[in-house]
Length: 633
Ligand code: ADP
Image (cartoon, rainbow, N blue to C red; front, side):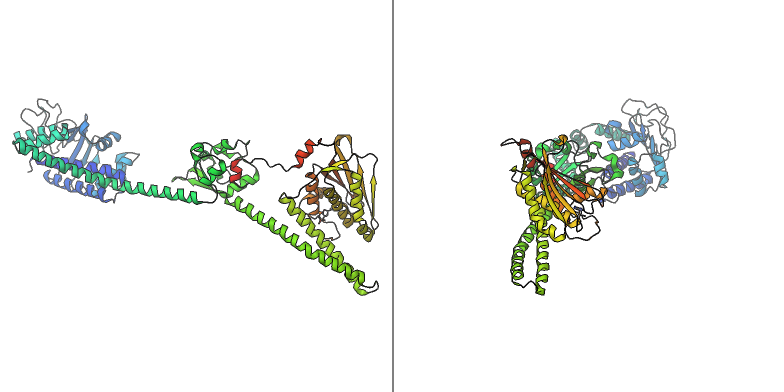
């Protein structure tokens, strides 16, 4: 039979191993060496304890804030490790009993109970653990040693291994200690127990002195042993703290590396990048984004991107369109939809950041699309402008050469007709090139207007004059009519003549032989005071109501029966030229009954009196909000 004091060492050691496992299972996975080691130790110690108990159960009982081991008080609750105390308290466990043959897996399951939300008993049952039982109160009261003079009042019921039997005068009335392995009470056991309690209550240093005092009475020797032990303990603690921290350090390093990597990727990106959380608050910004916003991250961090724009509702619609099923995760205030263009750009350029549970926690936008698109568009415009410009010069020489040849060729010569066709084709080619060139200039804002005081009837007459020959050749009667006293216009004369030429050339194209085209000017109705009107009225095929708005769009050619050439750009350019001079253009037409295009141009008010139009004629270059610049819009 083992001595009780020996038993207690085993119990203490088991408690140590078990609480270590309880703590470590919260930090590591079950197969982590630290966890495995603690469980193996626990299992081995339980085996040894079981041997001392001849196969009886070994139990830990929580009774009035005291831990009883096999019914003997071992520690008061304030000395108990929190993990153990919590295990008892959380599941209101009174007793944990271990039967013979408890395995490391059984102990692991008991440790894992901590994280379980339901009933602890159920948890063990589900895992088929029957060697560890909970709540089976074997000892409910202190049956053995009490501090000096403190009589236990319990009945020491149950047949457990009440090894801590009666000490001299210390046992309670009901302390029977009748179980196997019990009844070994003696002075030594009682003294050991008192010592254990004393140690448990003392601080480490005093406890050491107490123990060492039992080994030697020589103060110098005591001092030396204490120093040695202290150093050893310190070393052991440091080693285990270091071991425990190792994993944390590695994790920290990994997180730091990730962060540095993310930051350097963001910094080296050519585009501005802003990362916001799910409420649209700014978390990170790279230097490019800072430069665009004109403010440092420190100033903008935590502010909502929506508030910064201060532009009505037109702001970054984060995820509404990207992940509608997770709508609830996104602040409704940042779901406000902006202009379609912006919303689309953001949608294409935004990645949603989700946490491990799939909840949206923010987003990152790299609006490369918009930026790249703008660059490509610019390239296209530049290319078209250069190419059309370059095409023009050889075409002019070809036309001139053809005209010389034509003059020299005898009238009856067959080449005369061929040359005429060639000249007409070079003219068509030239007008197509002019259209494209004008259009690309308009797009890039390079078409400049010099508005001045101009007589409307002169503009109309000049346009008609230059189109007369073509109208004649097609057998169409082109005339000009001007009302008396039509106010002068405030217009770029050359461009306005071009506007009328475009309209007249369309009329010639769409009016059959024998038809008429009348160009006129008038002062218009009262409601449109401040404008002078140009009309180009033909008797051609006309335009259907549903097509009338469309014809002003670029590259639109509505079906008009006869196939005539053209780019579909003419009216788009014409409208742009009118609008940029603060004018308006409208169509009145019925299919089969001709079409009338009316152009309203601002009346000239006198030197320095055109503030309204001057202002409107300027293509306003408003200061863009920084987030628009960021998105390349
Ligand atoms: P295009 O250079 O191809 O003529 P426009 O932009 O000038 O292109 O005209 C667009 C379309 O509008 C034409 O293809 C034609 O269908 C219609 N349209 C323009 N002017 C007239 C008109 N006076 N009568 C009938 N249809 C017209």
